[in-house]
Length: 400
Image 1 (cartoon, rainbow, N blue to C red):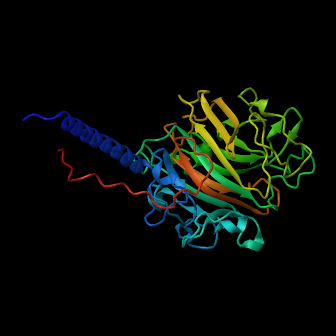
Image 2 (cartoon, rainbow, N blue to C red; image 1 turned 90 degrees about the vertical axis):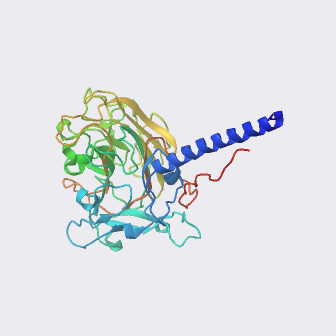
Image 3 (cartoon, rainbow, N blue to C red; image 1 turned 30 degrees about the vertical axis):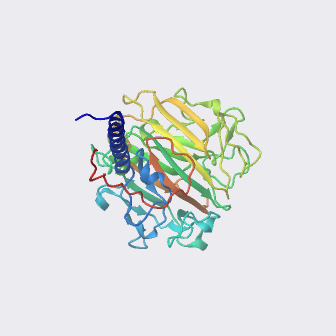
């Protein structure tokens, strides 16, 4: 039987359409399966968490019941429930420290990202204000994979990754070394540093300062600008070292010597303002935080390879503007006893009072919308609050 030209064209069109549909289905299906694991019935605030295959971990803190205390005395090991964690409580997926709270976002001038929802928008809080509840070190630990293992979504360890979160310091927040009276008020009475978010290998939570990388965002009273001979503890810096190499940082490392201190990021934009300098995020300039203002902070951390090589990368963005970049850093070393350089394994969201710091701490540090990804994340957006569902495969299709 002869087939007309029109019938041939119809068959070819249908066959091509089926192939295209199958390809699109496979791409979409694999992306959803690879994205950060979704919480059943509890959608993330940002749709990227359910649709982007690069995303490893998401937490919007909108479900306080997932970050619970079991006691209210001493150091409190409790639960942080998130499907991106592995190993249960035995692997230290916990929150501890009486200063940690989960509060409504609107308490800090943030709009509710879930309008019309039965669930309000919440934030993670480190509290040093005695009028607002228990005070103390606020720490939240998360283990993303076990030693030698993959992430919950089945993807392999990431040696090059991005961490993004929003951060806010209340107007009465005390930086380490406060009250600062001049541009160089730093010394035995004004140490030391305050961490925000640090990353480790899976074993790193057992002994962070002995891990193969003990690295992350912090402010440090020793962040020294050699141009104006100034030190400010509200300057954004990144620790890249461990105890064995005296905790080097990037940039403006006063103790690094010839070990890539990256002093080109000096001078400070403002040295006459002890607090709230109103800096602009400018690439190539050291940058200081204001209080009373929300920031979106994102950083890239690439592990050096092989161990000890000076080819690790740190980059940073404030509100979407890149301010720091270096690719000649020793960001991992296997000489440490805990972990290796095989990829990101754990992190700590933290705000703590260093035992050497004589500052009388006050105020609150607030964090929201934490995402960890293999690719640049960018500014938060509400997007869809629903969990994306994988479409069913087409059935009962026939070729005519």
